[in-house]
Length: 266
Image 1 (cartoon, rainbow, N blue to C red):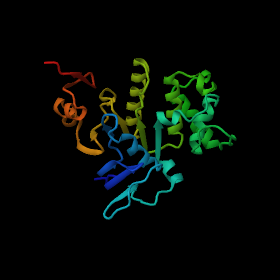
Image 2: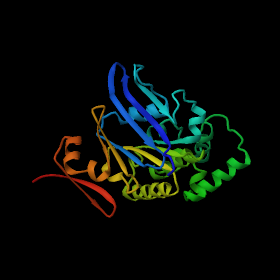
Image 3: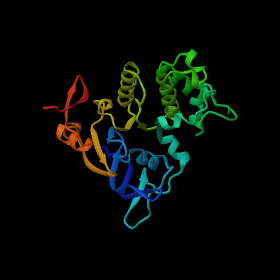
Image 4: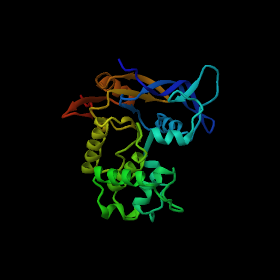
């Protein structure tokens, strides 16, 4: 039996931001091939968790506590970029509206936001980008437009392409459907399903139950900076658990492969 590859490990982790304890005693191990959704209300600590993985934020140093990516505490950012891609709506705000969409995608090779001096790609990189653009259905009239002229859905596809240029094994998604209309949301979710089926491992961080896809086989519930449950979707997404998570009476069900929640007005 093939041994599972552990790509993320957190043990007894505490994180402070501006003297506020945001995450407390976090214990979490994630594996390649296991698509996970971290679900919680606003203020639960989800964005802080993303910043830990991105290495833009660091935990408190204490005894018997560690943070590892692919088994290493001393994480090289350049090596990390080859293994993990990020789709973040927060990053979107740092891109100049005048940057050509193509340059945003290519910036994924260098860890920039697409502005500044352009760099020359080698032939394998060019072939990879061309194949990626084709697979994502990005038309040339989108590919060559300024980023600020694109719709929210088009911007999300450009950022997804940027996250995938290094052929990562893991894709980390921070509220991937934020601000998308119904059509754009379900097109993106369909694409995420295809990525899972192609072998990419997803870690999705969200407050929206409706964006959890069938391929998410594990749910982690985060509330007030603590993990309150970690199990299968059927267990974690019960009406009882979600009512406690969001502190309001809710009814949950699954229809046509998508989870939905409603207020319990009985």
